[in-house]
Image (cartoon, rainbow, N blue to C red; front, side):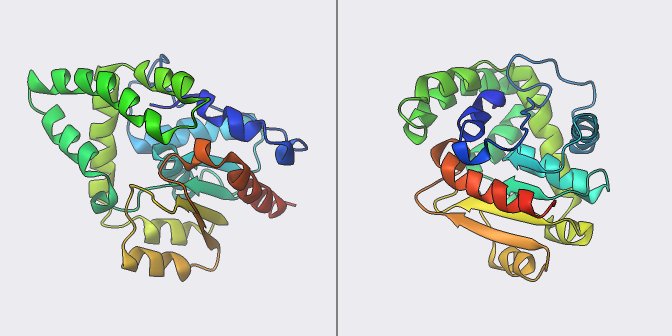
Length: 236
């Protein structure tokens, strides 16, 4: 549900002034047109094409976008460093709210109504998790989505999670230098087994951001900028 507007604060950080940065709205997010195939694998191919065209050395993804970036590496489409902000490594890690919404969304007649209602309620409810000076703009961005498109994308997203009991081995086997960054109070879970698996990967660095939740991208842009710089240094 988030467009490039959510990257504006990070990209404005002075620490990143020497880097050439490009932000991309995943097709179907906000008012953009979705592809016919909204599977995670197709999104990985589409975004890998953008990364190649823009000659990107490093990819940063947040939330579902972090999982798209993970899949880019897993499919061998991108070999540069990754910064994954609050990815999901298994279906059980996902928020109960989204899981219930996905289940309700599969019910004829009721599903479209549930998603339409979500787009009215959730952006307002999330304002408390957003920086006060940005809350109005960012919540408006989240509300500017198509309920039917969201419903399709989340259904495919859960189908993707169902294909893999855990995405930790998938990330580890990709062998790509990766920084996995989570907020101290992240709503997305991480099991003990998943944490141990990530810690055992020599090319994965785990970072916890204090006083941040799932929206750490806009809550702590300066700290995220530090991680991006660390990952960028690995490309040199």
